[in-house]
Image (cartoon, rainbow, N blue to C red):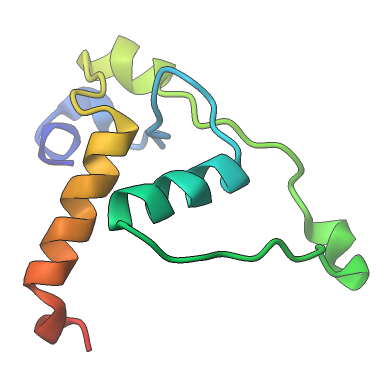
Length: 96
């Protein structure tokens, strides 16, 4: 974020951030349960009255920020999730 804010080349650009590989929401939920050391999730059907606003499949592609600013992900997704879980556990009182 700081790199983009400090770079004139980023002015007016919209950057998507992602990783090297696409991951489905179910796989992401399973990974989060794993790094959390437990938990559960449920899969719900998308409400039929909301289908008109469903974007379908989406893959975050960081090629624009890479070509513009040279940014690439430095932390693998699972490690980033584990760090995030640890951070929120340590600072939970600030978020409740």
